[in-house]
Amino acid sequence: ILKGLVQKQCIDNTTMKFNRLEVVANTNKGFEFGFETRYKKLDEEIEKISRNAEIGYQVYLDFETKKWKFDIIRSNVVLDENAFLPIFSAEYDNMERQEFESDTSESKNYAIVAGQGEGADRIIKIVQSETASDIDLSVMFADARDINTDTELEERGTLKLAEAAATYSFDCDIIDDAPFVYEVDWDLGDMVQ
Image 1 (cartoon, helix red, strand yellow):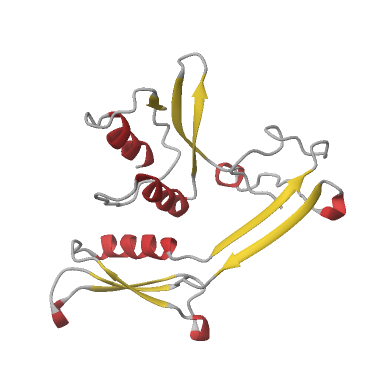
Image 2 (spheres, rainbow, N blue to C red):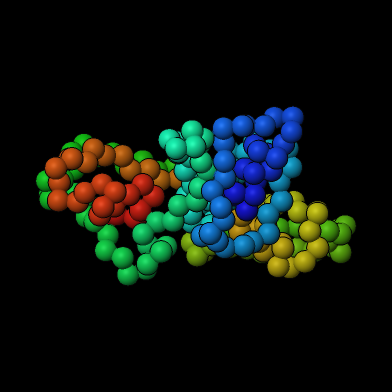
């Protein structure tokens, strides 16, 4: 989906073509799911999809072709669930400054997805995350009048919940001469401890 969106909007689009951008051939790194978008910001749509599919993306310069390449990246855990996770911690003397932030102010974990129909005849599907229970329940409504099947409604609900998930960020400075080598033991998008 990601490569298709970039191809269609940035390369095949004759009115707004990016001549120095190229999409790397598809190697099926993600999984397929239903997704529709129309006249929305491409970068925001790509971000939603990548979060939902647990994949990343990168744009890098290919010096031989002198073009920017768009490609999909997978984390070490997605590729191998038994992958070794490098440990970064001040107590191991391989990390300096560290800062953690979380924002749950707009997060939702329970979606009422309403599909086609009117009133009591409207198709309704409930989609919830694992954290949706009792006092922690945070409800959202998703209008999906363009959808009429349970499967598509569930996919839309899952996507809307992913968009409304809590955000967490951890920022730190890794010591360059630490025991774990960047691009050997770990890379951008990889899970670490």
